[in-house]
Length: 329
Image (cartoon, rainbow, N blue to C red; front, side, top):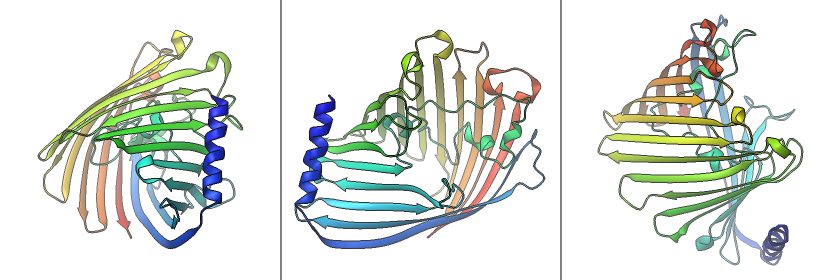
């Protein structure tokens, strides 16, 4: 398997080495938002915050018809290390042969990219409270929040996607190499079918071998969404399969959105995290609304969380909200 990977990468590098870029383009896009959030058990006196980002993309066509795109995001909110650069990647579009992406930072693994795809007007069930300024009231006496179930992910990882091999079917694979923070490499695979109008069916499976040895897990998720007129409904179920029962977790979610008009949407979603290490499930819900006019979006999510981290003490029951006014340019 390792030899096949080396041969494939060598062939790709050789192909790029004998071609040249003869058409190029440089573009920039970005967004800025002003937000306000908080929670009933939070301690922050000022819930206002600002998010902003600018993404620069440079692309060029090779002599063989392939297209290469470099994407770099300036995002001071992330501030990775001492740099203001956040997500950055190189993507090679090989036409009918699919796309290959190398992510220096911020590239999704296959399972991680679909860890929660339930319909929502704003935010997932579990992230509204955790994304507020005071972090949803997490203190020294509160438990750590359970999110959705993903898989391994790191800097300098690779991903392949193909949407043309079979009509209506997207085929994906990702590879996280071993290195800093990753004891062993991890591989993900996924399929997503959209060949029937309004219907989306997906399944992804992968590994999380970051810790190595007996701590390695197999993770998977399946989801279905159906859009009919202004209504979209969805259901998703994910699992972590570990060597011990205490590390084997399950996550279940459903969501529904209703497009009141071309500009206004409302949504409701619930999720349950069943951790093998706890006898009590963490339960999350989110009522959301969004209004879009041109490049402006005003959105809000109102969330409730019970038994954060699988604990039943009162501090682990939290209610919170997040309101955002965002502009895209």
